[in-house]
Amino acid sequence: MTENDQISEIVFYLTAAVYALLGAGGALVLYQATTKKAKLSWRLSLNNWQRPFLCLAFLFELACLLYSLYEPYTLERSHLHLRGQKVNLKIVHLSDAHFDDTDRGERQIVAEVQDVKPDLIVFTGDAANTKAGLLRFALFIKALSAIAPTFAVSGNHDRLSQQFFESNGARLIDGETIKLETDKAQINIVGLDLYKQRRKDTSARTQVEAERNNESAGASNNASNNASNNASNSNSSVVLKCASNQASDRVSNRSASSPSANKDVQPMLLALSHCPACHKLAADLKADLFLCGHTHGGQVTLSPFRFFERGYYGGSPPAYVNRGLGMFGLPIRFLCPPELTIIELQKD
Image (cartoon, rainbow, N blue to C red; front, side):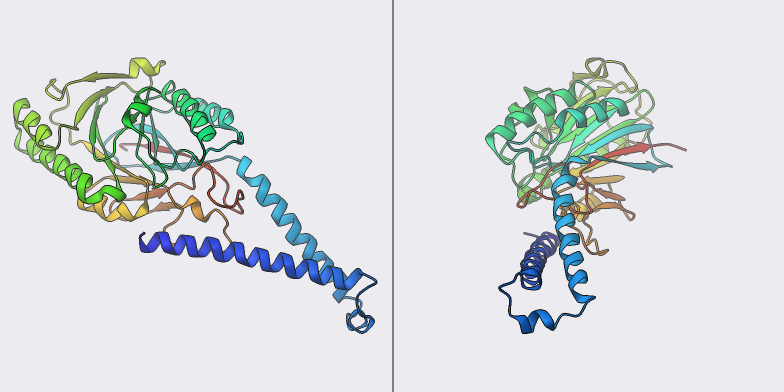
């Protein structure tokens, strides 16, 4: 577990403990202030303004608790516009579904994504908490892949195979680099896996560096194939046709040796990971944008201190930490609604 993970978990459990203590204390005070069994001396010690204040404080806390049970159903769209990029592209970023036995509006989420009309959908890990939730996630990811090309990386709670994603129209890219080509630009997407970093992410680094060396040196297609094979044969190329009506028309698989119409265009590198701790690795790879999740945005937030746990962060590379769709542990969210992130990349 990384330092950021430990901080996020400590903040979450401390917040839950504070809620529990305040709730117990508030209930006790309310009981003592109103019941006839309470000692008369204690009741008399409360003046006229203290009694209504304590009652209001307890009711306010109860309202916050009820709202925290409601907030998980309030999906929020977040928009991020980045100019000066190497490609014009609209990306939908989702993370941390944590689906379980309860329907938490998966159809609404799919409808929201459909309304956005993205060119690309990415999911940065943690699919489900239960077997029933996994079935829900399978239907969910299948519906997303019918909208746009969909790529995913594993989360710390995931044990899903490439076959699972492929059977539902998506692709798992842990430790892989995927080439996407538009009419005017090329995008490389690398999947960084924190929990297999020594074994797979080194392979991903080898792929990215080999591709960049080949592109800068004007290497032949055969050399590109050799570099790909040396990187565990996990590199592939995909043609992405932006703004097409059908997702099936957007993507066609082809070998890495196929000629590219954009040899002179410097590709954009998009790095995906479940955990923010992989930001340093993305920086080592000289990624242009880093997307991740894992933190749930804090899930229950009472403090302005974010500890790299939600939202946009500048730097090299710029990063976006998605608050996620679901929950882990307590089935509540407070001042941290589930999030659908829309990222629009623009050249100018």
